[in-house]
Image (tube, rainbow, N blue to C red; front, top):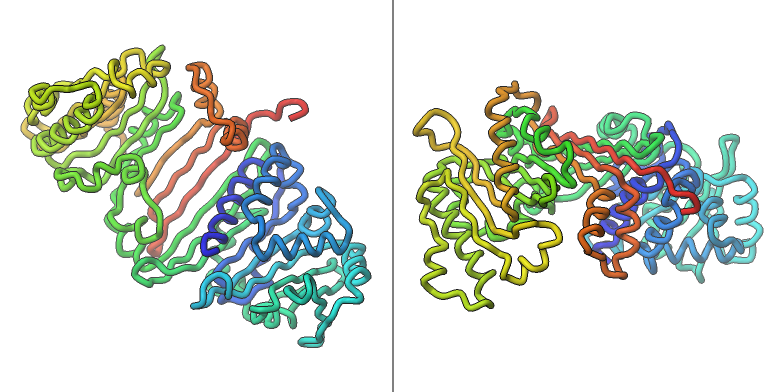
Length: 514
């Protein structure tokens, strides 16, 4: 149950990405005025019916229902819909289609004991229908407001009506502290609201005009407070997203991030299916419960004997160069000669593992460790007769494990890059990009933490052309990915010990009847 809020947030993010259809200028941040300033999780979505009816809305609605299935909130809303005799799209549009606010306050007893409240703006007709259909249910009076029961008293429900519209409030009866606290302000702003606190300005600034926001307050691994806000705004062909994260740990760590240019990213991004350039801040994302792709994609580096010679920047690219595939990573080097010795040993052991089932001899295994000699020379190990090589022929003309070390600076300088790739062209392509950044001499533009782009539709199309078919169980995921033309993002050091981010999701035109 402890993963439920995370599942809800991830699914909501997918929904926002895939359900854009028309321009909607909202003020979702104002929903923070309805909740007390000490809530730990807040989600506000304006015009849910519009999100649902956008491209991909049908599939994402089903995915959202699947992710929240059997949660307390799901059971409560299904019970209310059943009592009102509403189903399908009508139930969603009537109960969640205008403005919905979800708030939760954490307790030491875990998620199950954490009080939560859902506030929804509904039509006067729906509010009257609720009163009519739940008339015979047991009820209580709190704060001068009549409270109805749902699901045999498992949930409390209250309604109010005003000139601005009717409001429905729902929450668990077993953990009703937040519900009771908000009863006195149902339908209007709380006296000490989240919007009125110091965080209110941050929420509005995350994404001006956002029609959906998420606010999360949590503790990092060392018990220090972390505040995160995300805002999403629909545009004609996609979604614009803004992010703000602030904590003492961020303030301590991001000050080390230097200004860099976009030249390396701009060199690898134009035709890539995936490209990213990042600045690693040791311990930062780990304390926040996240990872850079360096750790996620290259677990061998976690215990790598030469990691002390790896610098903070890294770059990744997946794409095609002519008729050949490209998949490579580059790691900044603090001391190329020393890194070459350790890097050769690591790559040799990886190559040996790939060849071992084919009966690689001990002498050949030793030969795969180049010992750091001639670091500028590209190393290659043929993979065509390995299992990986056979599976990758659809993507790479000449499957090979390749790597090289590119020195930078004056002759005798120790800095540079270590480039690792699959495919004969991969190291060459990323090596050219590294050289272009050095030769361009472009002035640093910002303290970038991450710059990236993904083109899911083009990637899946290329995989299909190469004979790859995704398993049937992944069909819903691939269907959603094939709708996304591009996903771009940037993260940078912000003012006052914060991380600022922007993302843009662009969707392909909707196919007729899809």
